[in-house]
Length: 394
Image (cartoon, one colour):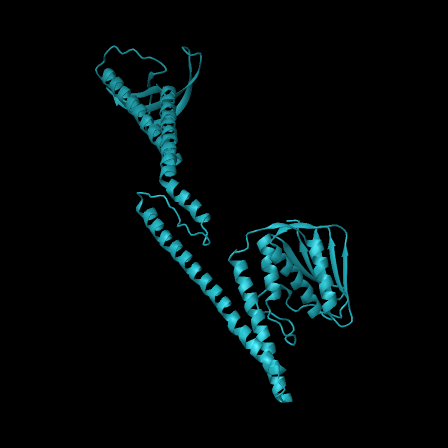
């Protein structure tokens, strides 16, 4: 639009200038004819002036400014000066044309053109915006439905129909995809639950038979060691099965009933229980009662995992420090060195110390529980202590 306006300006200006020059040449020709025919020709300065000259010169055009008595101001004129010989006499014929009106016409054309373009742009913008809103409305509505889609729901996604081919094909593929995702999720969920459930019974039977075998009097020392090792492996497998089942339930958001829980009292009870189970000194301090909104079973697992992890990796003859303060809890145990990869401690099956038998899922479950409830768990190593801190303020 800007380039076309500039082009129109210069093109119109050139046309008007050419018209003025043609008018000047036409007037000059009429003057020559009048002189040649020796008519009584009345000159009208400054529009037309005729002078006799000795020598002829080349024709030239120029702009000049002359006082206009009618307007009482200086006006711009286009001037054509020609030299010619008529009846053996040399003449200088000067014709002038007022160009002020031409500039006004040029300005009027440009303003009109710009106004037309501006109005056209506004109209097109308005209708284009409205049409785009109408065209894209089903897309954004369907996008909203997709954002609200959940694999946990049994309801199929509801998408608006549209006459636009591309959007219609997209809707068709999204319905197929979301339905498949829901089906796959249900199948995987059922498979995980079935495996966890079915493994419990044979493991319990094997455990009971091994216990009976151990209690018999016919075992030799070597057999007793082997059977005891098998019993420990079965126990570890049982615990691993329970943890994987719990982890699957947390990830599938199967814990939805939250209630008000005093995490301070819960932490104190669990720490007292561990005092009876271990020779490690467990120190518990609190400054206020911290109430959280959480699943009771998961809250119990959260506290137990952190305390058992601290006892398991604690340096010998050092106390475990548990504190509930400022809407946070912290569990600290002594260690000789800081962790080599602290950013990986919440990953599945990751263990810093391979000598300690562990499933590698305790801290992973802890992190998942915190994520489910919106708690923030942090790890740090300060003054030869491994410190796990949970902030409930969020």
